[in-house]
Image 1 (cartoon, helix red, strand yellow):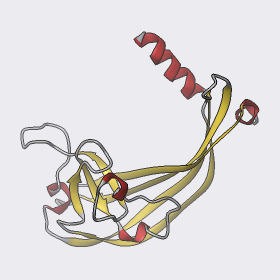
Image 2 (cartoon, one colour):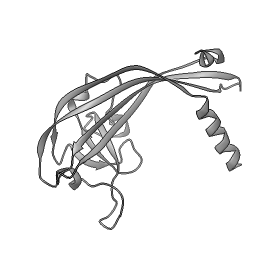
Image 3 (spheres, one colour):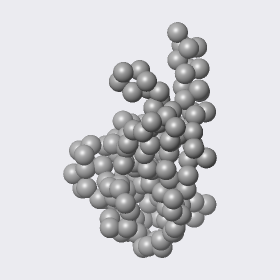
Image 4 (tube, helix red, strand yellow):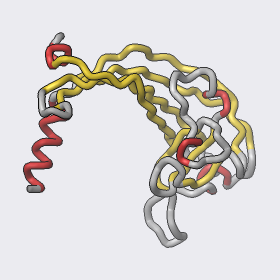
Length: 172
């Protein structure tokens, strides 16, 4: 059964196509403080190192906050990945990775891509159909608190979900 499920997932991914709709960038100053840099599981399921970036609001197409997941700050954010659960963890990130030198303001470049994704799947009656949605992908990097390189941050939101006849996915 596991092999069949894995094969189905691989097969579905082979049927996905992407088309870049928009690619642009924005420079902005961000405040790196104990309230804007944190480990949070709101919207992620596990604690992730995230930074709040107020200036994403009004520039992005989709809402990049995690307010629907209970993040009461409600500010747009980006994540760098899983936080360490304890000091002994060999992998993961900490707030100190960004704030070890204290609070600061940093000018960052945020890259944005809007991508149309089409995938072949089954509708509720079992018929083959084309599922389409648009993803907004954000990427940036923030200087480590110790100055030894940068930490990459990303965030993805999607919407405009539609279902079309199978032929829409098969068009070049």
